[in-house]
Image (tube, rainbow, N blue to C red; front, side, top):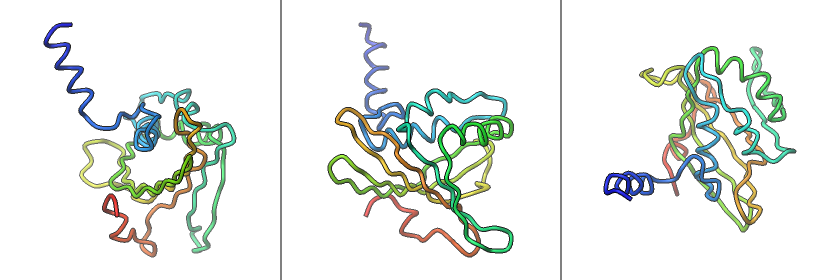
Length: 168
């Protein structure tokens, strides 16, 4: 191994949780954000998306109708890919975690992941913020997403300061 190869591998190893490291909670959450994010015109790796979730997994969005009624909508990962995939690829979409609070007991974990979304990485301000609530299961080898339950911020549901800081 050359010195350059060793330095490159060392830098890679020291750069924090990898988005493809499904042996960690952080890596699994990062993999979800990575797979749905990308510029307009770029195909997403939907097989990778499927591989992050248990087959019976659900994705549940909570939001308000124009009349102000609170609703939830539960879909499968396949539904998400069919319904949201073309929009993400057409318009561009970058969702980034800005804070995380994690609780773990044995082989289950809950992650409150505050996010910001932009259509381009260069956008100064996000067009949307919210909280993704991830429920994860570890089968003894890796973490799997069982549920993502989310709500976007709106004027009447502002993200509390405690969810804008990681930890505690």
